Image 1: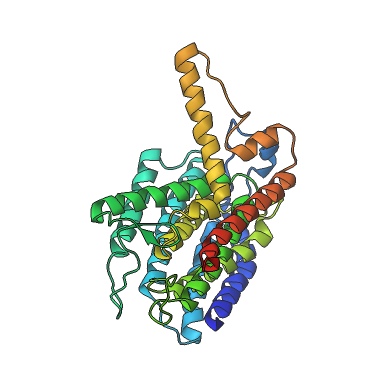
Image 2 (image 1 turned 45 degrees about the horizontal axis):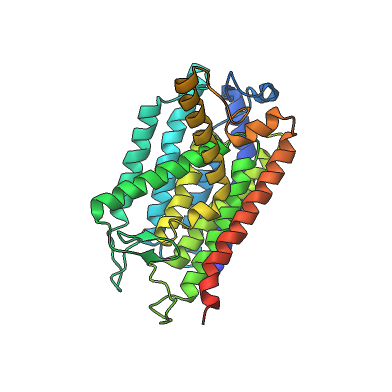
Amino acid sequence: MKTILVTGAVSLLLALFGTPLVIAVLRRQGYGQPIRVDGPKTHESKRGTPTMGGTVIVVASVVGYVVGNVTTHEPMSASGLLVLFLMVGLGLVGFIDDFIKIYRETSVGLRSGAKLAGQIVVSAVFALEVLQHPDGYDLTPADAHLSFLRDFGPALGTVPFVIWIVLMTAGFSNAVNLTDGLDGLATGATVLVLAAYVLIGIWQERNDCTTFLARQCYQIRDPLDLAVVAAAVLGACFGFIWWNAPPAKIIMGDTGSLALGGVVAGLAVCTKTQLLLFILGGLFTIITLSVIVQVSVFKMTKLSTGRGIRVFKMSPLHHHFEMLGWAETTIVIRFWLICGLCIALGLGIFYAEWLVT
């Protein structure tokens, strides 16, 4: 518990006091956010806002994790390091995308194929590595199974497991990216999901099968260190959102959104709550589905009638409400509330099995 507190505090302070320094550097270099041409007109005021702020989140998280473990003399685990690897790797893909946007002064960065290829490579390496590195109890960071509250069903085999983890990780990193369209929206929602994973990691540690043998115990390799990772990123997000809240002084860009999507997906894999993540991260799921519905219906109706029909005024979903005239802060706060409800539902399901005697 001490490591969690130290790690979270260090990450928070680094992000809180480091972000204004980064803002000053980015402004001096002229690294401002390009605006999507077909986006809401209210976003014109955001043009030129310093971007790539996700770099602060990634650096503060990694430094906070290392400092927290070193100062409390706790070993850094394979599970924790692999989740951070996934975060940093996807953050690097996002950084390249952001830099190209800034360099070309356009809202289009990496080609979609190149961006997806980068996500696939990083996710595949992560998926292969979590099946390695057994501890003294022969537990690896993950097993080749699907999981909800724990592993279930037959083993998938290495190749199907890697494909599933790549799809899940790439999908969730893109989901957070889609959500990052309003000041503070994606950061605040991720804070709530990370807080849930701090609680999940602590609970799994307290009910670890290696120390507490019971029907509901958890066979997780490094649950407490995974809670430390979640706390590191949580603290960094808290510090960053001080400057990212409406009206944002800095935008995290794809550097932050891909990194945050990666870290929550990695935590889900290593805590064996893969499918539960779709409930805990229900807001990200809903927003992604809004894009899928919008594109699918438009294409199908255009093929059948020659005139595409749009379900929403604009996707992702938060832009639909902007087009209806909702204030940005109203949308952000209400979407945070929806995220909180999803977290409550997910944690309720997670703890419900302990109420069954």
